[in-house]
Length: 167
Image (cartoon, rainbow, N blue to C red):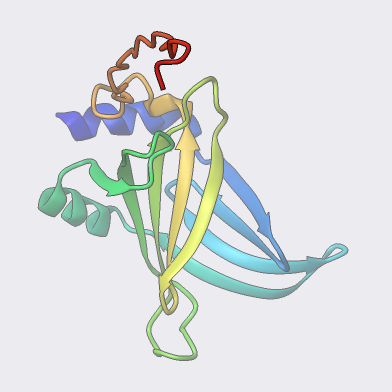
């Protein structure tokens, strides 16, 4: 039930593609399609790696094993960040070091405060295995992604005056 609601919330992403430039590379994430890394000079792409194609079966298996959202350290409030994951595990360019296809996990997180849909970070936690974090305001109203505000404790301060000659 939760998964269906999350999937429906992400539907407005349609077949859109999103880009992030980091140094020499441009990264492209196309929702429920593919992830790639490339270098472009002028109009020509001079180097390109497919980082995986969307796998509905691998995504469903992950959700069956771990649920439709996961928590990990690193939220913008210093608390755990909740995310929903899509797996891009087939069709990746073979890795020179492992001879395995490159794979990517895309983690969807709430982008609060009127944020926009965007790739917010790209990591390579293991050789040729990538993790993209994708911030979207589409998830922020779902109960599983609401930011838990920590209660604020107020401190009342009083001035302490030393008496003259009292040491």
